[in-house]
Image (cartoon, rainbow, N blue to C red; front, side, top):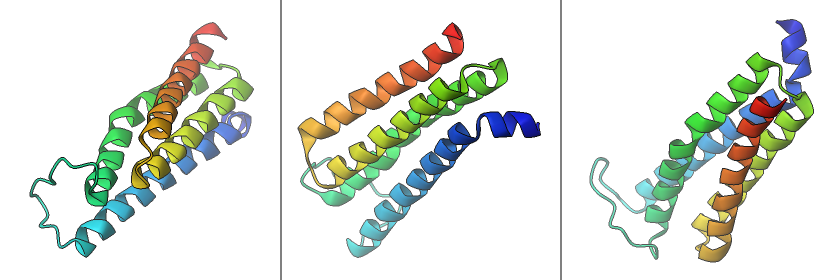
Length: 133
């Protein structure tokens, strides 16, 4: 087990970074909800001009893709896929998800969509690494 952790240490650190990003997104959404006096459990109006809506969508969208990242990373580690390529794909996913969140918070739709697409390509690369190596 120790060798496995050592071999995939860089990817495991990416996993921790993704978890930290998710926590940060949740805190941002919660703080914005409190600041906007949003009643928990009530619908946030679908309005991209509302930063609370954008923050909530950031959390939701990350939640929609995180299972693929986790499964892909576990598949690669358990199948002995290339540690370097696994790390590159994992850190790419984290980087593009970070850019995506920043662009959503700041309402930059074109860059947000591009970073979303690149994060999906990172997930595809992660799965491809596991299958091809």
